[in-house]
Length: 292
Image (cartoon, rainbow, N blue to C red; front, side, top):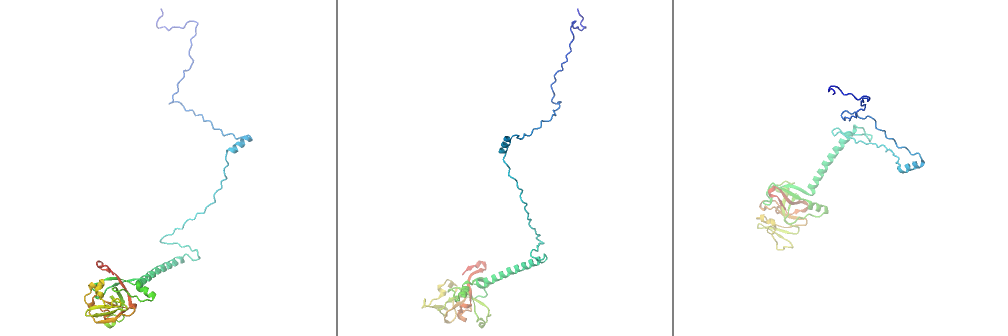
């Protein structure tokens, strides 16, 4: 029997062996040192060395056109002027100090020209086209009232002047005219009158027994325009004693307020050259606006 506490001995004549093989260790990714070996440098392509290879490369690679640089372009910068202090460039030989004076003078001439043109236009319209009037007096009541504002049309009178023919309005038209003999009746000599035409050239006008009668070739027995024309509903009586034949280039006119009107029954027929125009519109008061 062998005691338990004694190590067994190898058999006699056989050596003891100690393993010299290093165990293979598994690398730890957390502690592994990265490989710092540089990557291989790519090699440039080797140029063709034979004539055939050179011709192949020349045929395969397209030739690039020669690049011509563009010509330099001059940049023109616009001139900016201060609105409050304009800058003038003396390009015509004048000094820069003279430019503002010349500009101011041209501006003044422009303003004067505009004002003059406006005045000429206004004068032309008033003289030859139309004009505004205000009624003064009761002679045309109840058709027109005192202080009514009217528009008088002058174009027919202007055309008559140009063509050298007398302007004869229609029977029943309300006209504005100049009467040079008003001073003989206590009226201002430059006063214009507004009356209604009742007699035309060639008519014979008779006022008798407060009735106005007109005789002509179309009405040899006479007719009363106050009864046949639309305005007649405002006419009552026609005082006076008149028997007159109207000459060429003349008209006979009376106020609608026959009992209070200074008209052809007093100073006779009116020359066509003294007619200014005819009434077309009453504009004021607005509630009595009316076309004639």
